[in-house]
Length: 215
Image (tube, rainbow, N blue to C red; front, top):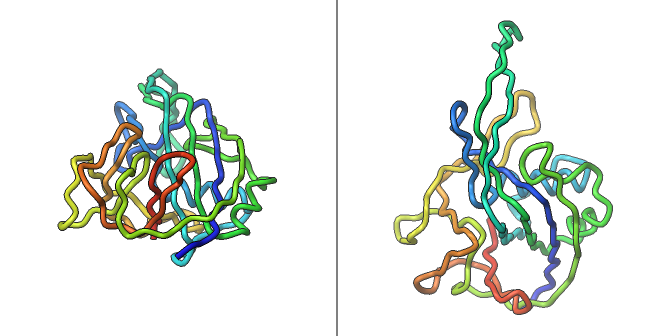
């Protein structure tokens, strides 16, 4: 089947995707954004909380290098008492590109004039929209050139890649709750599939990679 797909290219100097359960000590970054970050970018662009199980969303994320720096954080209790400073080492990604794919025209349109700042992680990781394209693609059920993304873990699917439990999205209530946490394979930009991966998606012929639909 042939369908229209919008490709949104975003770029940022820095990016940081925190390990969900890592609170203190060395702050490492995931090599690719979790789905919750992608939904957060869409929500920021649209200016409202957005989440849908029915939307076709795919992404490919690449970075040039990893670096680390020290920063000051402030720790406090629930009663906002006993505030104290601390110094931690934080890892971050440098020169990042995110290609976001969707069949939803409203999502693509919102990135032309984003309502809120677009962030690749923390508030200092500002992203800009480089280009928005529309293309015709043929759907596939086997993908052979997948990288820079995440794939849901299943016992039948064996991939030589790190596995981490990641939330699918966060609620819009305060305090926010993570929802849909499940294990995912993390495929960085250098990943080479050992064979075909059974998953719904398509091939971006111009970029030379396959895109998996995150459903």
